[in-house]
Image (cartoon, rainbow, N blue to C red; front, side, top):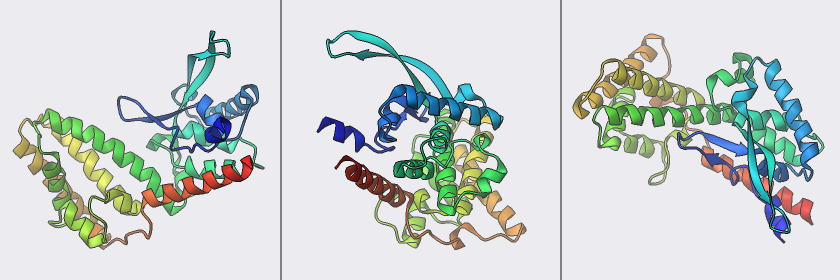
Length: 280
C-alpha cells in the first residue's frame, strides 16, 4: 500500500517553495513519480538533461543544485545520499530525456513545459508553446513579479495591499478594480483573476507589475498614498501605449474557457489515473 501511495503522488504534490517564493523539486522525490525505481538509472537521465541544459547556453548549476541528504536505512542507521534541487526547467529537461514509452513522461513534459524565468527559454522555444503553456509561463512570472512588487510596496509604506493592487488595475483597466474584472469574467467569489487570463493579458499585467516595482525603487517612494498613485499612473501609461499601438484593451481580450487551476487539476487527475492503472 505504501508503495502505491508514493507512486500516486503528482508533480504538484512534491513541489517545494523556498523562502523567496521560488518553486523547486527534489530529484529523489521526482524519480518515483516518473516511475523510475533505481537511482543510478535515473541519474543517467539527469546527466543527459544537464548536457541539454549546457548545450542551450544555460547555467547547469542554477538549475541542478547538488545537495546531500541523510537517509535512514532499515536498521535505523543514517547514511548520506546524493540529491538535487531542480528548477521547473530542469524537471522539463529530465522529462524530455526520459523514457518516451512511459505515458507519465508525456504528462511530465506538458506539466514542466512552462519555465519559471524569461531567460530560461529562447524566443523560438516560447513561440512553440501552446497558448495554455504560455499562460502557465506568464502566470509564473506574474506570481514572482507580484512577490517582488509587494516587497517594494511594503518598503514604500503600503499597508493595504488589496487597495494598492486595485490602483494598478484601475489604471490598466479604465477604472475597473479586481472585483470588477472578476465579475466581468464571470468568476466565482475570490477566484484568482490572473489564473483566468490569456497570455497577452498576463503580459500586460506583468509589464504593469515590473514597471511599478522599478518606479517605487527608483523614486524612493515612502508613502502609501504616493505608492498607490504611482501604481495607478503606471497602469494608465501602459493602457495608453496599448491604445497608441492599436492593440486590444485588456478588458476586451477573451477570457480562456478554463482557469489554470482547472488545467492543473485535470492534469493531476490524469496522472493519478495512469498511476493507478500502472499499479494494478
